[in-house]
Length: 218
Length: 227
Image 1 (tube, each protein chain N blue to C red):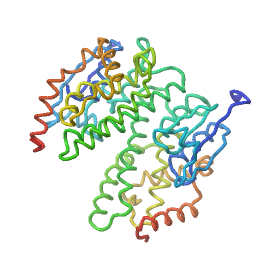
Image 2: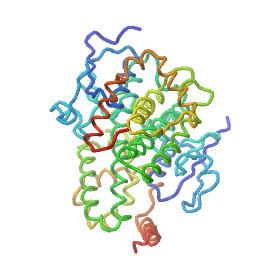
Image 3: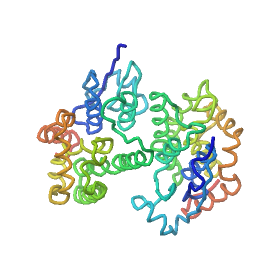
């Protein structure tokens, strides 16, 4: 059966990274289409009229929007390889709770570190608290999914490529505050799907610098 | 279908006027699950709530055989996966993804925007009303040709969107703004009628008079003018 999988995405998006990692974990062949966020394609606007955002996963012409929803869709559609979510309902609920926590807390606070003038210090402090909460949830586990790399790991790992940016503008050291989390990130980077997907920190730093100029912050 | 076990313990920490709490009651009732309801005073949270939901300290929290689950959308999916009678989510992965999308849209977009209507006046309020209507238009279009968001019967999105039917639309009376006029949103109004034809919904939503009284009292506390 001819299967067509298209991903509308942007290389620096930690949300797009989630979907790319999930597709890689499942060995799904897909057509990656880079979007210019300042000049969105008509396809993007057609496929995600509600939010007009990337990533958008298009499977046989039908769009799935929102990165966490995409991961679940991918897990359910290609169930044979590398389960991304546990099968036990309570463990699933636990994973969904933490992925949702990441969505509610991490980006909103992290953005204030580099994209809002005068809020860097306060936002950086809050950001560290959020990371510490996550670190406490990780505990001594290899991954958030315990022995298996999965949903919560995928939800969070993309932000690691942005840590340099947060450290620079927030004047913090994530390594010294959350060493266990850094160790976890490095374990994730050992996985091919993650290593292939996460961009170089320097590249992200240059991109953020450009964004800040556009926003009149530099 | 037989209950899983006689000693199954299901407890819900909730609040009678909360749409997030009520949606859990709807789901449990639809599935025929017996549960113990524990009313929380959100101005004076119990130590049990703080212990079971240390991250957000909010209701609803479902406790199943001693294990807590928080966040209403997560709880709904847990209920659907644990008690398989009367499925709430579709089986097909694509349909499921769409249901999850719209549920998230109601909670993260409509709810957040609509909340801002309360406490605003004049042009600022008009702008928020417009923004809320733009968002509701997406739901309006979703309902065309369907009795419910779930199709012929109640589903995940219907349960979540009771927030619109019985909270947003009830608040209209009190703030004196028709956010969801029937001429602009005939499908939504038709859907609300369909909801009210369902016994579980009728049983599980807050009684109208008390609910309106409660909303009025809250607004007074927040110093908001009522109509």
